[in-house]
Image 1 (cartoon, protein in one colour):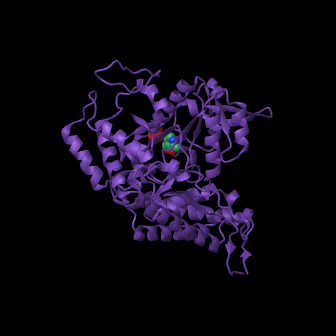
Image 2: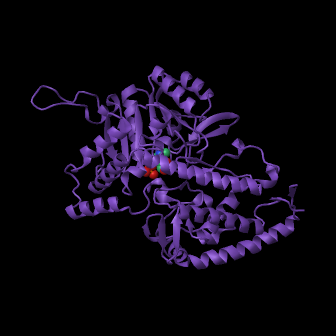
Image 3: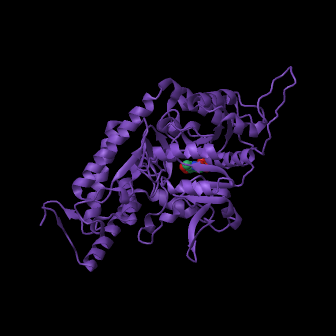
Amino acid sequence: METIKTEAPENQVSRQQKYLDRLIARYTERTKTSKQLAQAYRPVLADNRGLPGLSFRSKEMFYPIVAKRSQGSRIWDVDGNEYIDITMGLGVNLFGHNPPFIKEALAEQLHKGIQLGPQSEFAGEVAELICDLTGMDRVTFSNTGTEAVMTAIRLARLATGRNKIAIFSGSYHGHFDGVLVKKQTIEGNPCVVPLAPGVLPNVADNVLILDYGNPQSFDVIKAHEQELAAVLVVPVQTGRPDLQPKIFLQQLRQLTQESGIVLIFDEMVTGFRIHPGGAQAWFGVKADIATYGKIVGGGMPIGIIAGQVDYMDGIDGGMWNYGDASYPQAKTTFFAGTFCRHPLAMAAARAVLKHLKTQGPALQERLNQRTSQFVQTLNTYFEAEGFSLRMANFGSFFAPASLGSLPSDSCSPSDTTISSETLSLLVYHLINRGVHLLVRGSIFLSTAHTDEDIDFIIQAMKDSFEELREGGFLPSYCNRGGS
Ligand SMILES: Cc1ncc(COP(=O)(O)O)c(C=O)c1O
């Protein structure tokens, strides 16, 4: 029979403090050069990565691991520690770090030079490969995902002559002002407000924030159909891999089509990952415009705006020929960038896309299946231990699943819920054990991860949870068979 162990609060606090002192000592000794660098350069280097995760109790461990080199599934830090990396460039490194076919393409381009201004030798071929894999008509390039989303929205406003856009709560679309909004209740009324100081209040006037996967969102879209230029959707959010609403997406497609609203799929993470054709191929939904980045740049900065002719002609006026009376006739908007179609980014993207095309969907299928198996193994362990935690994956990225969507546990959730502090501490434990990830960051597997790597990560997770339990950070845990 399962029992719940309880402990006097004062005992638990002192147990936690002792445990934290030990963890901090071990962690800061092991990664001391990373810590020294963070402190030495803080006066001049403004670095906000991970800052929302800063807590007073674990402040001494709050600094980024500084990487020195990487290969395959591994990175090495400035203290000489070796890690199996599961951050994988925030979703960039689908093939692991420094894969030879990308390295060679970059070295070759570096040898030839970095010519900005003239057209890149590979821009046309890369555009063609993207159209081929995604089914889109035309493509243009930016330097980041943020710029790609910004441009996609501008193209939608150009095509429709409308101002508003709708986005879904929980989705991240980058950091340009037009999407930096949040929901807030003011004097009992739900409102959309700027996400942070510095974003103009009137940005929020043009954005609706809807519930993802909730059919009531369709009523809001219908109510605003004459004002909406675009609905922008991350088909599966990195923070909610368990939410994969296929029918919702198909209905959204139908509704936006009927209302003349541009459907933009933000495939920054799902693109080329879940399937060569991204989430659109996976869910059987064709968007009007899709934005890509991350994987396709092979480690180089890139953003891609791909779409149907009617929208993409807003960049250059559309098709025309030499030797006749044709000319670019479509109405255009503004688009530019010194580094767009950067020769190194084009060379790396060409190598990535050619590799994906040669390998076919089997590459993603294998990796997706291995990730699902990995997540299943973890969930079996969590269940056996009575932890109110489950992982979910969409293809090769995974994250803790929403607790609300979990089956009920044998222990009461209030007793076994794993706090965000505990999950942050888990990250420090994993780093101590040679697994690299970011506090509150998304987690990715790559084709470079071997079965041995996966076994190592699973064992590190189990050992870390065991330590957290001993430290009193899994309060009143279920103790299987204990008394
Ligand atoms: C779905 C989505 N859209 C847009 C972006 C912004 O891309 P970037 O960081 O390249 O500007 C991200 C970044 O993580 C993303 O996940």
